[in-house]
Length: 254
Length: 325
Image 1 (spheres, rainbow over the protein chains, first blue to last red):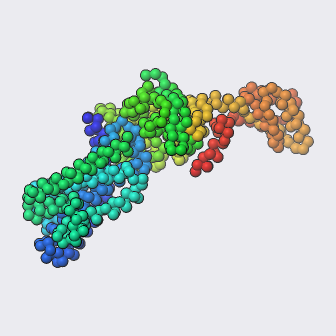
Image 2: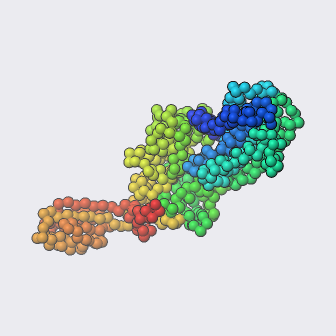
Image 3: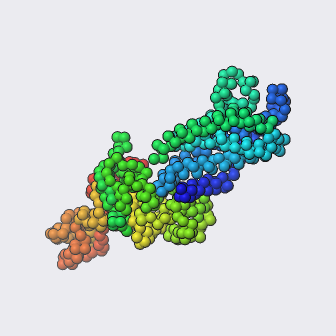
């Protein structure tokens, strides 16, 4: 157990050094969410007034947080794929470490990064006048909900890192997954205003439940039934992904 | 522990239709440098990946310092240092951060960590460069860092896959010195190479591997002497049409020597194939003196491992390399 902690720490430290020495990566990841928050929030303010009621940026923020958590987690496996491509991963696997530490180290790094990005977005939202109805506890809850989605999506990304042959495919999958996952949810508009076929997909999209819960924390405060519903959906999603990840990665890391 | 650090018995590995290793057996003694020599695609890297527990063999038995690689792979991993062919340094990390990273992966305690880092850096000549980021290091320095990372836990066995591939001449020499220093410290080195001069310079024992089979194994000098062929080249002084006769006389005279295998005339030179030049040279000199044939130069050469490879596989090594590239 002590050895597991030592080897996992070593790998986490490596990823944290990457984060610290390449702050542009974070800036790059935040580019799209920030554009959405500032420009889309401003551009659609008048248009959205009637359907969402109140400030559109405030309405938009949960969707943007969800998109950020999704995008960052989805990209989380990429460094492992690079390690796989350049031979570092094999060298790592020639050391007497538990294979799980490779996944746990990366998993922790990705989710720390996600939390950091969500904190930056919440700060930016605050500057643009977004206030969180649920208060400081609400901010922590928002970060926790972001992680709850991030956990499962990170596992998907780790699976892709080991299953895919090259990073080109990986970037393509990330590119085509983020927008549909967000648009086919209640991220940008209320569910009722979506066409029926989109609404059907949004209903089975875990992000819808996550965004609804986040939105209530921001707009109105603590809505326990909504939070419980969200927690159940995301925990089931995470559980399913962990199960799948365990099955697939055990084979690839033998 | 026995004195055999690597024991491979009847090892086989098949990748689909391709036989990577076909019934390989070999042993490496403690404290020696062993070279697996062969062209690209001969099976060298597969053998190393099996020894490093990264690839499972199809059949056969493999032991590292008495530990079976299939029964206790984790223990084997702690007994080896593996430096792959590709550079595996992380451009974002400093030199010292790399070594701390590996120190933790090998579960070194905090107390021994820093002294070991200094020791490893000293061995590859990177002392004083602790805080440089790998991104800004030259290719050769990156390789040295890679090598240092492989010995932070003082493993009894180091596996080096093509350690000097793509390095320039002076870095290559540094790497060779590093390998020799490891041997001085009692570390066993298993290296794969397709450079004959590298094997010749470093290895106590080599095995020439070709198409997944070991063609021949032994000490480089022993392999060379198995060819029983040195070449002595005698150049006659003041050579002109008139002297041509002298060359023919000399050829006739040395051909009578029992030690001479064959002779060929080449301009002013006579090339003489002999079993061993140490014995043949005095005899040839004696003949030239008694015939009063003036000699301008006399040179001799021994066959390199290139010739050994050619002899035992029937193909030149260089040709094979080009085909693969």
